Image 1 (cartoon, rainbow, N blue to C red):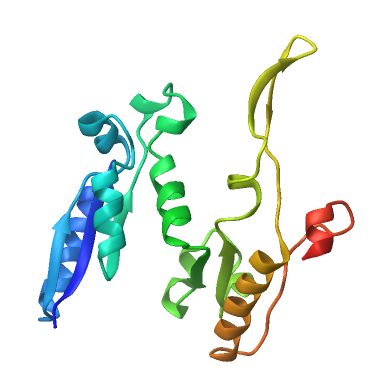
Image 2 (spheres, helix red, strand yellow; image 1 turned 180 degrees about the vertical axis):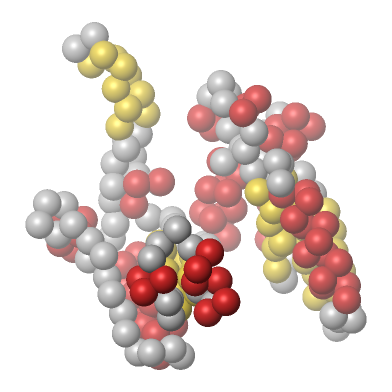
Length: 197
């Protein structure tokens, strides 16, 4: 049975990267059905919104999403809800994509190419597990306003115990497949949200 992939190239380097990724997928010889859609700045230019309903519908109906990149300086002055980056946040929220796994590995052959000292970067092999749908990206209130005559920006960081538990499960599950170590980074000496974590 064919697997459906929503291909969302986006902006900037996104189309170039996605083009190469599609070549790799085709070289695998698997039976993938690929359907393209606009996302980010190009979607705003063509549809008036960075995440059109048609793109979101395609993403929900697909087995996987191949996402390029979004953002372009020409959209910097758009109101926040129309900026290209809102496409990423919208997809995360609508699809419940709360965990971001970022592997970081330095191959022996590349240790001398790093800006870090070789003894620091040698043997680097870790996975950063980042929570994506709680916290400061989605907390309300958020915005900008004038306070005491100064432009002021504010965001609200909110987490509930289920959001924390589910990302914890991802982190520990990932660790079980590796070296069985988890390091949780927080600011519990200052932040109430970190104390809850």
